[in-house]
Image (cartoon, rainbow, N blue to C red; front, side):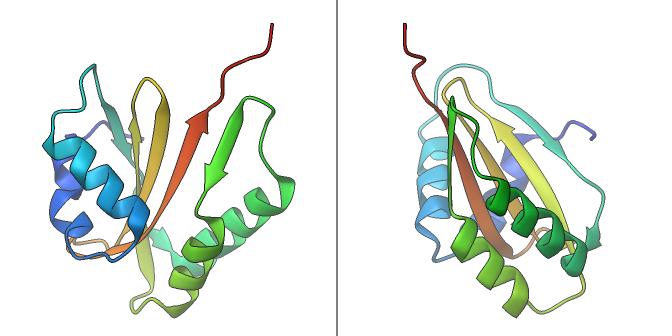
Length: 121
């Protein structure tokens, strides 16, 4: 996945009513501290995205990660206009956000948030 600027998703996040999108947008606007690593996929089909993320949701989380937003994302992908999406990964020290947009990056389809859990001693 090629590196991108985290700001590339801001316009699309502003179009979303998803609470995870609002959380990420606020975090980006307040300068979330630390380094944000951002990458993006090439456009691929919504059907492929549904298949991949339905399977990931069914597998569940690893012991050190909690993922939020699968149900909303899968519903949004099924209802989204357009045949293709781009997935943007924005990695912070404590969480990774996956932002799904249309290929023009003007509309946010959905967001997943993967939170790193504290490991037990």
